[in-house]
Image (cartoon, rainbow, N blue to C red):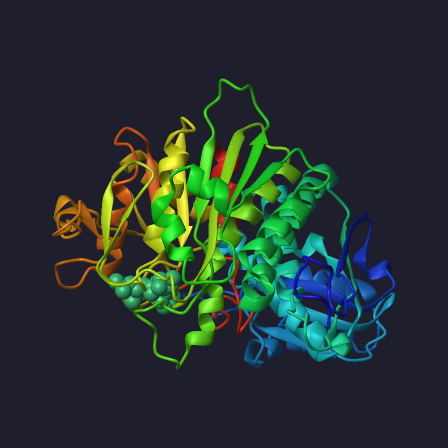
Length: 533
Ligand code: BES
Ligand code: ZN
Ligand code: ZN
């Protein structure tokens, strides 16, 4: 085992999935499997006849290979009338694997359904990529050649669908293999993406997809690491490491500096732990200094025991994920820098443990935040807002164009929206529209939640300006957001994303996310938001 005190490289590295875009016919590419896409046939209501055109792309490829088994394959793909009765209809999520077909230069053939052409969207390919990877892993195939000419021709530009395909492949290849041997037998090593046309835009999509998926997988890795191996200090080291070779400037403030900067609320949360808190600042300058930055803020709670208001032990191990907001911010800044976006951006991550040590916050304690507001700590488990508030004060001082924060803030969020949607809170309608647009392009589901003066009123303190828990009943996520709002200057567009329900265990929803483990949620939306600016 490696030492606990460094952000060193992997325990046993998994062969990395290599993607290569080439010009030509996929059928001529040497690989274990040839992958072709098929769309769903549509029954014509009047004639009752199936639309043969819909399956045409896959059919044309297979027919073109002209072997004696082609007939069987065709029947199953549905290229003939008989096929209409076969179990494969080209629906999204359907796959057909033909072993040892000796078609073209590949040994096996994989047909992947995309659903009806008219409902084809970017997410269709991101998910199809997951089904490709699922089949390659199950059949223990190391190399595949994907025929991109079989992607339906629609109004969606080549770079956009290519990016989604590439994201889906890399996201599905992720395995957390730091502390036990990776399953190398199912690791896919090479995928050739082969097309006869549109090379410039496909290349663009490939590059963006690789950077973004790498960032998401990095955020997942940070989240999946256990609390003893992803302390605030180590999180800071990882932020510094990922910035190497980019234009990112990273500084990691220590406890003395945090104190000196009057982040009394953040500091108070760290006092119950023997791990030093860190404040991670990542700056990216891709535009003129006069251009206001987008500031991202992420909760970096590397382990949340609840503190003196300690959590029940069942499920407490999941609180290693309480830094997933911070991980998303670090990964977002890394991606922005690698994509060389022409914007200015800053990432801020207050990082600490929440532990019940002898100097820990006690219920009733009063702490003072950076903007001078006093806060009663009536529940030490509502600590996320006590570290984000100081970071938000600092964010406002950077004269930002917009502030976006991500945090595993409230269990109530997971109750309200489950693991499907990330709830977001903003009073700024224009910002809400921008968020919906960015998220819509990435396949991440977000849902706007209410934030009103009533919620803010519920957060007033008895002995101090504010209480860290609500005096009212219910709406725990909205009152938490209202608490954060007290630290954001009124004229600055700000949105808060509560990822408590979506930061881990989302593989039952999105086939390219791990069944168990961190999802890397919000990285794609945040990067897309930055791209749209
Ligand atoms: N990190 C938790 C929120 C959380 C809980 C995230 C479950 C994901 C799954 C947060 O620090 C917390 O404990 N919040 C409390 C707030 C309450 C005391 C007002 C909660 O949600 O119970
Ligand atoms: Zn907590
Ligand atoms: Zn927490």
